[in-house]
Amino acid sequence: MTRDGVVEVNETQQTAERISSREADSDFSQPDSAAAERVIEHLDAAHTRKANKKAVKKEQEATALRTSTSRLQFTEEELAAPELERYIEKSNKAADRLDAAKAAIPKQKKLVKERTFDEATGKPALDGVTPVVNAFDTYAEEMAVRLKEAVGESEVTVVSIGDDSVKNSLKNCLAVGADHAYLVKYDEVEKLDGAAVAKLLAKAKSDIEATEGKTFDLVFCGKESTDYAASQTGLLLAAELNVPAVANVVAVEAADGKATIKQETETGYNEIEASLPCVVTIQKPNYDPRYPTIKSKMAARKKPIGELVTGDVPASSMEVVKVYAPAKRQAGVKIKAESPEEAVANAMKLIADAKVL
Image (cartoon, rainbow, N blue to C red; front, side, top):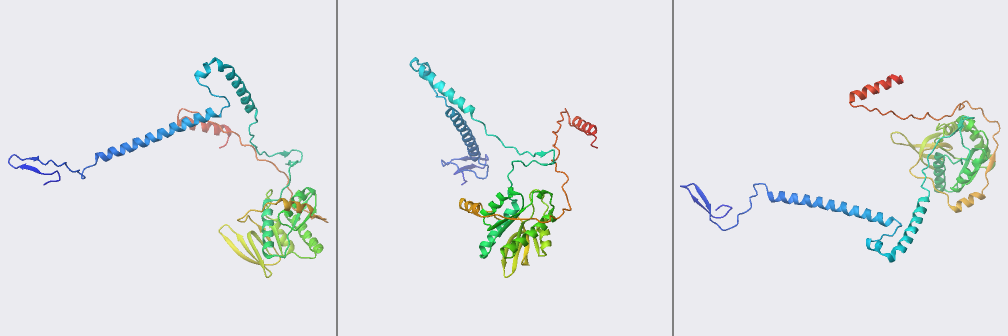
């Protein structure tokens, strides 16, 4: 017996004849040509399905295009019918008017930010620009308000230096959790450097404490301003007050006359304990400042903003001499050549003409 059934063997003639009527079994020792055919059929079916999907999508897009128009669609028979001619013409005129109205709708304009400068003063042109609270100062206030909510029986006071336009920003600070707001009136705050600002803030702290009859335990400052980004004022203020200072702070807890501070570094975090009072400069924490509600805005409108006098304004040791925008980058030059060698030669000639090397 073989796997093909009964076989008659003639050893003299060295022949073998299959005499079994049983169907031969499959030979699994050889590659299955049927399996290959099935794979090809599967690939053909997948290709057909993909082609069908493309055709369906194309038809859907065409249908959407037809239905998006305001014009009614008519068959050839309807267009040829004399009794419908008057109505089709009326429909087309209405569609023309609608298309004209759609075309008259203004396209959405893309706003482009552009730096503008006052050539006479050499400073940014800020006419019509509404002052806003510095981003890092909003983080500082949010952290102070959260600490107030956590410990209870405490208050948050915000202080700024500037002219009357700053009062709107102080009102916004009151609307998001501050209890008191004070403005140190000074119209030329742009001329003050970090050291001068620190001296004015130290005087303001002393004046407020004398007025309120309370002392501050923690002074929160944004780590830097978004215009000059000097990161100096908070640390210089701590030096003026002769108190500890911690920079790049992302979390603060206070209890038993001490502050437990989480400081962000390039390699991770430091946990620091500092005696109160102290100054902290705030980095962006893992949460965003809260938004004012209508109720809190209405309450902030009724709260007064105290005004403080500067007294003798300290002299600044630094002065911004000029503010200017970087030169606009010129468009590049396209080099067209038949070969890489010619392109390199043309590029070297342009470099030599420009005297770059």
